[in-house]
Image (cartoon, rainbow, N blue to C red; front, side, top):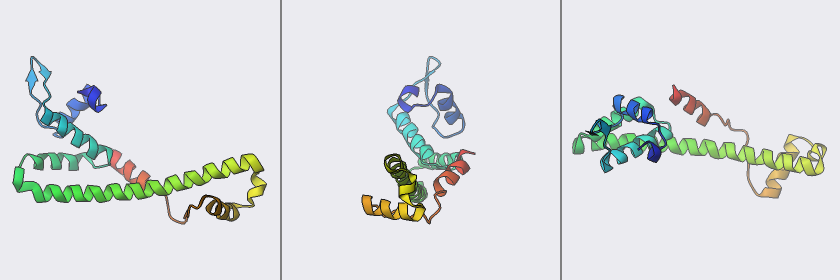
Length: 153
């Protein structure tokens, strides 16, 4: 199972002990993963990879075992996570735009010299004109990194 998920056996055991996964059946002392277990691992992995805190994943997984009674709560959790992913994607898009500008800047500087770029405002205007990209660098590019640092704790 570790090779399918990319997690080490120790990580999978930790997730199980932490209540992120249902109790896994054992066969001759080895964990015997069912299709339902693999699906649960994929959900936990997805939620973790998109920045959901472990406590919230634990709560979601506990609610999953309650059937129809918890559908509204699970839906609310997934809607919040979907909105969080959208914010992360927006922040990453902004960061990517800044990186694309810097790539263009250094490629242009390599060909023409930095003096040809005549300062940041001229360089940005030229970048917009040449690429057709409407880069806006007045917004902070911090949301994604701050959120990930917070969730890594």
